[in-house]
Image (cartoon, rainbow, N blue to C red):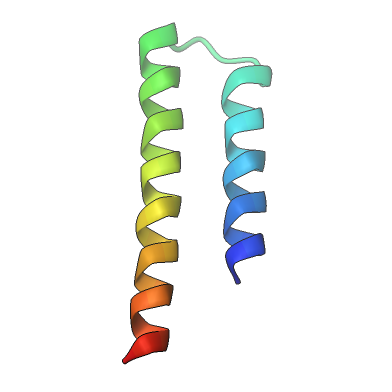
Length: 52
């Protein structure tokens, strides 16, 4: 599950920076940071649920 979360996050980052978009760079960076934080929170949640 952790591998899938990281791979999806990497694909999201790839599409944010490589895909054609009319968004400002700041918006694209904020999307990338949000994606990374979301992945970290998801992995932490999975780890916490596994222990309880």
